[in-house]
Image (cartoon, rainbow, N blue to C red; front, side, top):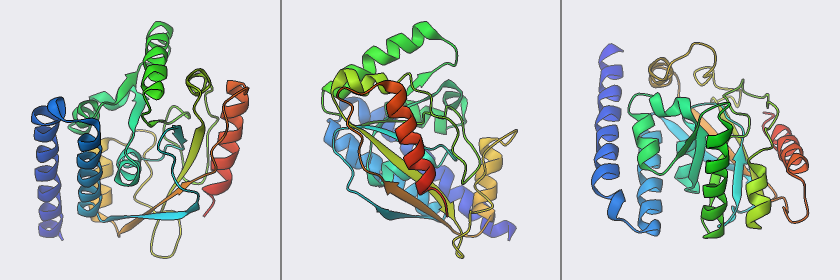
Length: 243
């Protein structure tokens, strides 16, 4: 068992190093379509190495141009979404300090927000609107933190205003991680004092994981209020994550 775990961990580490090299040497010169293709392929490979299979669970097609909002369960969330529908991400500043993963997320164009920093939030908001207006797909986790599987925390409404100002729809995504029996997977929880390293070891040692991703019906932002959008997205995601 220890040899098997060491082998799995070594393969993940090598893959992470490849990702770091790509972010440093290729991404600064790559076109947006090439970055998306590289991000999708790298994310899929990482998930395979972690024995995570990604599966669509109903829903509707993903929009090419939208503000994507999803429930936040694990550090895997970004890579599950990117494996299917690569996005520019907005994430909490704490992710930037994660070993290796934080650097990778930054290299892939993730925008980090410090909690309670209103000046930074206004700056990020302006940049977010500009990116959306350029036709890119942007994703964020409006709960602001990871939560228990099957439970969706209240969605913070502030950044929903960006979709309204940019004139793009909001598309909710629902994420769930299940085992072979279709129950919430025991290795996925990423709450409390759990660190990234703790979580990685649990996933590598545990049984295979199926990540279910449902792209839900988009919400029209024109004429809407940000709180209405946030509540509608939250209710849609909460209904979809029930296993």
